[in-house]
Image 1 (cartoon, rainbow, N blue to C red):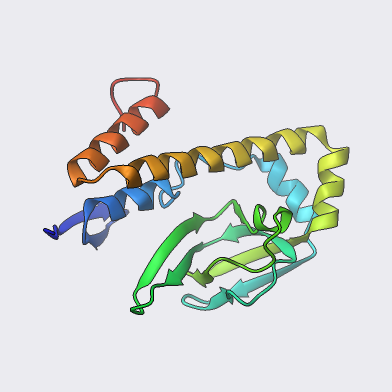
Image 2: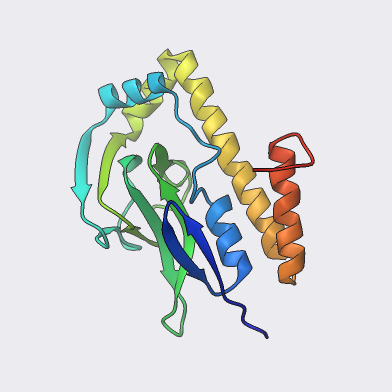
Length: 193
């Protein structure tokens, strides 16, 4: 296997990527948060219904694989990553999450009770945690909130489907072409930005 290195500049920061698909997954996973933009009204509702909030410093473990998911997390400020460790001890990034995004929301409605990976602060974090029952009550009584949340969930599913598409390609060239095709489709154009 040939390992390729390249550098990319984002917001005046230089990142070195071991392979192209790592960079593509970073973008598709919301690293640049280009798809999910939370509505101000939705933020206002979350500010009213959250159960408690917490602040974390960079590199702090927010949740571990032994922790039971009892709340839906809403990331107000900062970014986090969900990671797991391979048998050889290498860190694998499962997902990157930026501000104005939820986590634990899919898990809390599944039959899994613990987190699938370690949730680690990539930067300083401000998280609001919402009790499942309170969240459900708000969805029931506020149709606009429910529609915005369902839209958010739909976009998350589309992210996952496109990630799987890129993962399924064997060469970096195929992965890159798949990514370009995806970005053009997002813009309803033959071009992307």
